[in-house]
Length: 340
Image (cartoon, rainbow, N blue to C red; front, side):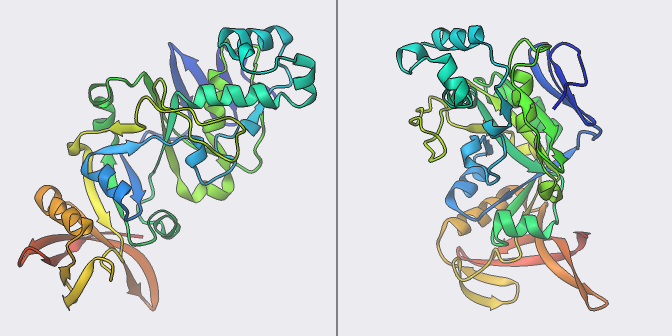
């Protein structure tokens, strides 16, 4: 890969420019910042807890489902000088814990120092995957199994209160993923960059075109001592967390919530009284529905399929809920919503 842009602390790749500007990570792209972004969730305790308490989980790369997503395989260390190599080990005290052998590591592709760099950087960064696709069949299948739910967030409202609700947050970056046919590594020691911030930003902002259907917008959060989970991918032990990987947002940022078309199923419904009346089991899902009734009854949608000329398309119809008794809920449908 060659650096096309020689401006200080920038890296240009295709139509995207990754840069460090006034201490902030910025990605310039051809895409306009969306007003709404969507987050899909499985129906499990962690997902419901995140929604009920209004936070997004800032993942470590080890949590992600694409093995090349944010991978240190995208970091080209071949231009690492012996001076910088020794400086890194002594600056962070790693020379007291690990063997320091420049020639030996160079012959091994700098595997050890790359892992140390990787843990150092990912200990202080988190990844939140969002999308602009609310009705994509594969997204519903892969990220909610049709039994989960999806929330719509007003990005500008989230952004305006990030620092207030997350006082330990050092910084953040928000940008669209760049999808490419072939992944290429980046020189981690670009001559025009004073730090590895820009190569790191590139590595978290690029994915293969196989994933382009997701239309992902990525929110990167930066906080000291997030921790690094143990992984079979790394020979290094887990780094304990001093701060939870949670990014809080205001409840007013939730513009809508959509339930998967199989949200109501035998795991949470005791009796189907009629097609729109559910006697629910006492469970987290019943508490979840009660929370929706209390806070979002004017902005609930239900995902489904509708038939047009013998073909089926994905839809999302506005609904509301009422209670017959403490366990029985009735869904009311409205002839409004959106579809593919």
